[in-house]
Image (cartoon, rainbow, N blue to C red):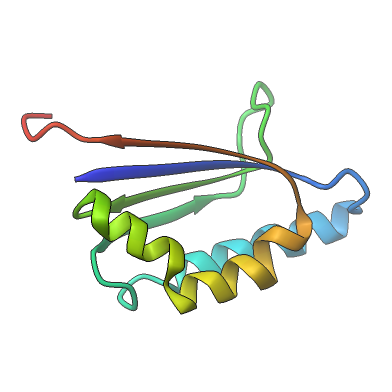
Length: 104
């Protein structure tokens, strides 16, 4: 199993109301991919973090393999969500991908 974690910082010029709308759009768009992309096992967007967080929103997803993660990255449904609901509103993106050991 492969974990794919993304942290985003949203653009500073977004109003508080826009931030709420953007986060909801990202959540709806990405979580809506469940069941449509082969190899995608789990996908969850966390919109609210603790005050100690340095990111505005997080994606936590799991894939059956590294190859499935690569295919997710170019899958038309994912690209459409990324291009319409994520990229236009994001200032910075951090990614951490890793393999989950079977005995964990």
